[in-house]
Amino acid sequence: MIIMNSQSLEDNEILYDSSYANCDTKKRQRSDKISNLMGQYLLKGWRMLNESCPKCETILFQQPNGQYYCVACLEIDQEKPNSIKEPLLGNQRLLNKSQNFSTESSPFRNDVDIGLLKKFTDPQMKPHSDNKQTSTNACNEISILTELRDKIHWSMSQLVETTTPMGIRQWVDTLKSLLDLWDKLLKSNFVKS
Image (cartoon, rainbow, N blue to C red; front, side, top):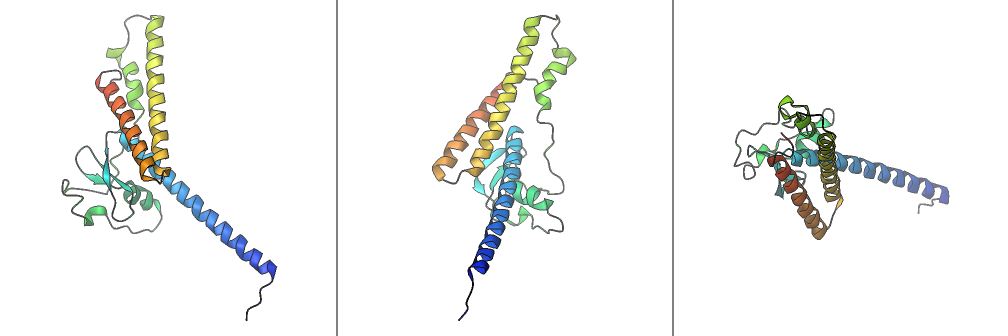
């Protein structure tokens, strides 16, 4: 028979609580990193697929060139020192459209915001007059695009945090609408990309 006093029980509970909180914090940080990268890739024109990674169950993306990409396996989990990761290449069913998949370098360039200001720094696109109305329109365009970008990032983080199928579907639909608007604005020369 093991007899434990109340102090040892409290110590065990404290140890359990702190290790649980630490684990929860790490999961939250990993999730935040993944959602941030996903939002950036969506802004770059990548497609979010209706399939998940067989290794980590993160939603897969398809690059504009057709390659499949798992943000968690190929970027977030690679950040850990001395970790050896098996590439996503093992699952040929998912990679049938891109036989030249490479994990050597991330295809993401950190220039998401360049397109927002390019229209206003390109000498061919500058207004011919210093009209106050023209500069007001330029500020409004940047403000609209910045707000839209922020809503896309926020929606992406909400999607990652959502656990119910209905909630996931609602956030995916919201993201599709926001990204369609983003594409239409870019294609209509609202912003020169």
